[in-house]
Image 1: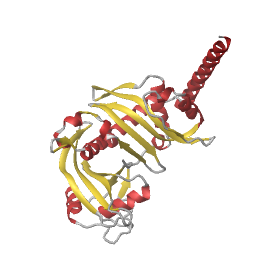
Image 2 (image 1 turned 90 degrees about the vertical axis):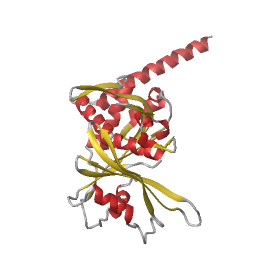
Image 3 (image 1 turned 180 degrees about the vertical axis):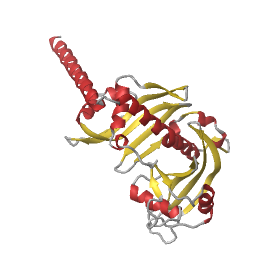
Image 4 (image 1 turned 30 degrees about the horizontal axis):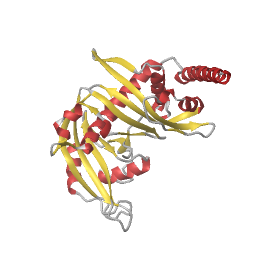
Length: 314
């Protein structure tokens, strides 16, 4: 599935009703080479959901356009339009900043002259530069992955169940460790990569959050924003019993994915960042993690040497 990004509309004249009515009635990209034969349809209309004790109203759209020439393939994507605290937001299946911006401007009936009208979510540097990733990895590595916190005197828990993959930039040119399974954090290749990493750009995690027992999440950092996606097939949690996700007696994975994305973008990521800030204040997460990993690798190498020596003697 494509990566998604979070955007907001800064236009006092725009309303949720106006925008959603327009999406259902107008034609878009009529003379576009980028999106030939573009179509968009609403597959879920005016639904309400509570996220972090706040009510959200949302619509889910599926758009499509013709694929390569001489083929009958239709390229598809999802757009979520929501209203939260009076603000209109968008989650779209597009990761690149310029591409997503021009796409959303067209759908919201703006032009390039309407600057700072469709804007991406503003993330602090620790999210964009990978420090948040390191903190999460450190929690998993040190077996401190279960994090308790309070929201308005209500006790809650978030659990970082496993690290499933990590990518980044290193001094040696190694830029990818992609190994699946719950034991990735203990593999020597992963530990060596973390030692050499200058900046993490992607991390895959399995997370438990509130009444969602299993969210398979992949997050990527970019210069201006972050993009992320989830795997609805692997999801376990309350949404699987939610009537909104059901169609013809089966779970509609597009709608399920949309609802999980709303939770992840609007609640999970902000919660993780808030916990990171409170937990890492006055500490150097990277320095401490590197020190512990160095000791771990040294011990493992010594253990391997001893094992080999014993084998040779036998």
